Length: 317
Image (cartoon, rainbow, N blue to C red; front, top):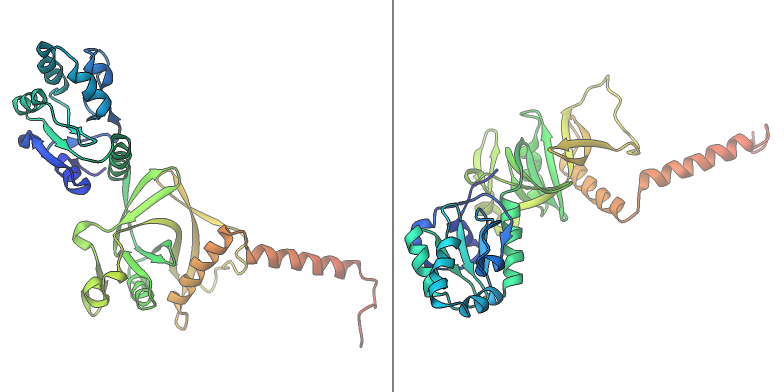
């Protein structure tokens, strides 16, 4: 799981730091957001202090009606030792009592002009993506016609070279060598490159190349949802490979299952075109057009007609 700090939220969502600069490095461990309405009324029995606290127009309008003696107490209790940060939304004025309590406890107070509900959704989505369960897979992730294709296989089988050819054909590289994968929901996996390897591709005999420098910004992408896995393996003459594509193989990553295709590698096979076609075929299947199933049905009809035809009929010789 990644580490998310208050500073990350400030930079990503463009919120303004008002007070508590000492707490800008605090870590956020949950994507859940709390809107402390009951706490403004003084009820802290079930206060979820480990969450980012979001104050909007409703909470601060009620707070403004409190007695002056109660205001500082409420904000001091709101700024607990394990509260990551407090964000004031909807362009509301930050109460002086909150600034005082935040400076005392080292809790960052941030402000945004975005309406509270919309900002809550933005923050939840951002934290949900960053704090999702994560694993790492050796392979290459490429965006082909909007389909995230994870290319796997043993070292030296040609994954990076295939990715290079795909980029030359107009597709986009997401990650090479190591793909960080986050499960943001059931069967929803988002892949990206580690920061150190972003935009980089390793070609044996050439070395590390920067794809964004060579091919431009349109040749790379920061992250992509993975929809299919293409596993490259050296051609085994004794192995029977799927020729129709009716039986769908699956690959499990964390708690999610992805469609997996095994593509044998041998001289003369254009892997980039094969993978490109695999991505297009996957899209067509999602649109309800399955060429393998249609062929199978037609074949069944032909076999049925042949078996029902009387002996000798249909033979012109």
